[in-house]
Image (cartoon, rainbow, N blue to C red; front, side, top):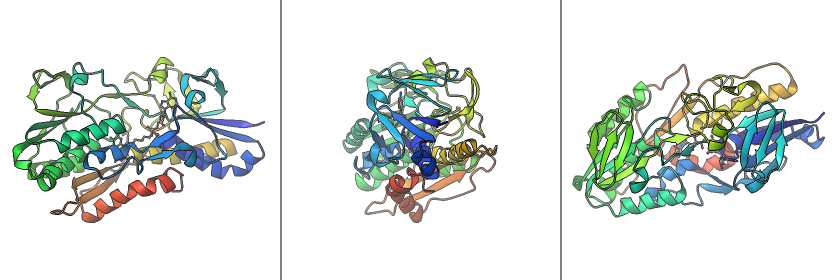
Length: 396
Ligand SMILES: Cc1cc2nc3c(=O)[nH]c(=O)nc-3n(C[C@H](O)[C@H](O)[C@H](O)COP(=O)(O)OP(=O)(O)OC[C@H]3O[C@@H](n4cnc5c(N)ncnc54)[C@H](O)[C@@H]3O)c2cc1C
C-alpha cells in the first residue's frame, strides 16, 4: 500500500525535508509506493534573514527570493496557492483542508508553517510601525527611514519573546551604528538605544560579548522592557512594568505567534505555540500525542530557539526520523538543539572592515567565548548565496 508524507509549509524547514525524502526514496516514489506532498499558500520562497540587510542595501530582492518550484524536487507533489493554503488540520482524522476545499490525507505529517508578526498585539504599535520583520516592502521602508535620518533618539524595540532570530535586532542595531558612524557620518547627532524585553541577550557568552560591544560603541541598552503600549502622538513607549521611554524614531520587532489556522485547529499549547517533544519533535499538545506528526521550525515550542539554523538541523533530524519510520527500523533520531545566531558588529565601509561571527550551540552545549572577525563577516555574507542551492536543497 502506498504511504503518504504530507508537508505543510514550503519555507526553509519544509523544503529541506521534502528534498531529502525525494532523494532517499526516489525508487519508492517512482514505483508509486510512496507519495511526498508539500503545500504552501504562495509560490515564492523568501529568505527572511535577508530583511535585516535590506535597510543597508546589502542584498537585493533577487538575492533573497526564489520561485518555490525551482527549490523543490520534481519527485515531490507540490501545491501552491488555493490548493496549498492550509485552512484546517485534523490530527485525529489524519486530514488537512485547504482554501480550495480540497482535502489531503497522510500517514506522516510535517507541520512547518513558520510564524508571523502580530502587529495588533501591542496597542498603538500600528500607529508608528517601522519594522524589517514583516515583509520585503516593510524592510525597504526601514531603508528609507534610515537613509533620511539626520538626528534624534532612535529606539530599536523588541516587543516580546519569542521572535524568529532574536539576534537579528541585535545585529541590525550594530549595523545601524556602523552605518550612521561610517557612511552617513552623523553618529554624534543620533542617540541609539536598543530596548530588550528580558534581562539577558541570548546565552551567557553571547550576552557578554554583545554587552561589551554595545558599551564600546555608545549604544544604550534598556533591558526588561516588554512592550505594552506605543503612544505615537507623544512618541512614548510603556512597558508591562509601567516603565516609560521616549523616542524620535521607532523601529520595532512586533510580537509573533503561530499561524492562526493552527491555533483555530486546537493544536497550540498554553503559550500559543505548537507543542512538541524537544528531542523527537513529535507532536505533543492539546490535540493529543501523535508520533506520526512532526513539528519543526519557527512555530515549534516557545523554548526552542527560532532560527533558520535551528530549522535546518530540525529538518535534518526529522527527515532521518521519517526515513526510519518508512523503513520501519524503529530508530529515533534526536534533535539535539543545534542552533545558532549569526552576528554582525561592523559593516564593511570605506573606513572599516566588516566584522561578523556565526555563534552556534546545542541544548547541552552553550556557545563559547567568541569575537567577531573579518572572516566571519565574509562567511555570513556568502552564506546567503549558498542558502538556496545547498541548504534548502538539503545537501548538508
Ligand atoms: C528579520 C529576520 C531575520 C532573520 N535572520 C536570521 C539569520 O540571520 N539566521 C537564521 O538562522 N535565521 C534567521 N531568521 C529566522 C529564519 O528566517 C527562520 O527561523 C526560518 O525561516 C524558519 O523556517 P520555517 O520553515 O519554520 O518557516 P518559514 O521559512 O517562514 O516557512 C513557513 C512557510 O509556511 C507557509 N505558510 C504559512 N501559513 C500557511 C498556510 N496557512 N498554508 C500553507 N502554507 C503556509 C509560508 O508561506 C512559508 O513558506 C530571521 C528571521 C527574520 C524575520
